[in-house]
Image (cartoon, rainbow, N blue to C red; front, side, top):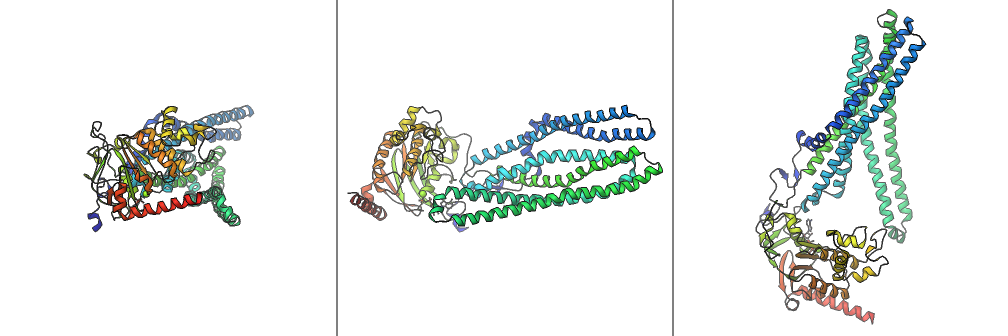
Length: 611
Ligand SMILES: Nc1ncnc2c1ncn2[C@@H]1O[C@H](COP(=O)(O)OP(=O)(O)O)[C@@H](O)[C@H]1O
Ligand SMILES: [Mg+2]
């Protein structure tokens, strides 16, 4: 706890969370709150769906009654062939209705579960996009993807088929047993004796089935991920002659996948025979005792036949009880996890309104700023006091000195304490995040480009930009000529199906993207590292033109680039070691001088080699 005394920027936690971004276990009503909006919105759809479902159940229950009347008519001799034909036609008519109604409820209710899934997915996605750095340190990408696939489908299943099966099973169970009791209560009791065994075994088997099925899915993703990574790195694999090794690995994974699938198949193979076995045990009881009751005249032959049909009708609802219990349990666990995710709150404050900063001079001021990451108690930035007003500022320092961390604080990805970081002379904690971010442009060392045209990549932050504006930004980022050298110019596709750009070209494209947004502040975090020395000057001239009276912060370890800036800040171990012009740092700062000398040497070596 000692370290917290110097570093308290993540001690401020939202009141309802116990560990920064992880909320307490959700209550049932909180979890259902996630669903209630969609249920309310589609209540008529659900009502119509369940009405159709109940009607199907009713019609199915009528069929044994019709058969009973036919059989009884036959035994008493009152029914002839025309009557039998009529009964047959009636059954076909009912079956026709059942087809239509079944389609209707499936469409309405399963459709509803898909709508519900979409709503929750959108909720998760928009929530994730609102989150900050500490959140993404805790949640891995795989974790987040699992929420939007496995957990979501578990909830969708529980609220779709689970809900249907629960209602359907309950109605069929009550009605069929009711009809059976009406025929003969004692016979019903005897026939139902084996049924609990069916419910319990289905519950057990469907639990195992789910477990093995998850293994199948996991094996399948391993397999696809393996082939993907192999294909992506095919050059590497060939150069290390790893083809056989990879093939063996692939074969091994395939074998595991088959094994997992066979385990699923074994359980699936068990479920239906067990149901048949239990059903037939009931049948044995009915044949023996029911037959006796028919002979004794307690029930008619028609009753006997109807009873057998009702007994068969019971098998599915009894199995459904075990299955639904599993679905609901899984759905609830997943819904709990989703609730945890969407109720985690960001640590960076985001007030709804902020101070009006239009009249103020944009720029950052750091007042004894200290910072440490939530995962480690040691401060990464210590007691930094600096001002970034209009002009071009260079920042340099060894790897790990805290340069990128500073960028993350300026772009408001991580929380800072009150009174330590100011934007346009107001505490950053009083600004809505969007208000600051809309004034700060950012270029990272490894630019992210999308598989899209060059023009679309540049206009990412301003999709409405005209072609002229896009070209102007590209010219200022010294990448216009490179773009024109491609056959399709600005319409060239980048990425897997398009051209491969060099590291320097990618960085300059990212710079053009930032220039087009025309923000008051531009942060370049080592974003010119791959640009060659000749182009560097051109890029710098473009920056100077574009950012007159604005704030540019360039993080770099290239002394040639730094020498062009207005002043240079040297960071060491999270502290400001020196500030000054290129000349002054050459004279005063050992690190800077050695960087300079090393780069001059390697440059002249390069020149010697060229000549
Ligand atoms: N997300 C993080 N969690 C914990 N420590 C981090 C994190 N990111 C960076 N650090 C640590 O902070 C220090 C400064 O890192 P960084 O700002 O990336 O340095 P630079 O950009 O100057 O190379 C390093 O010691 C690094 O290990
Ligand atoms: Mg860095």
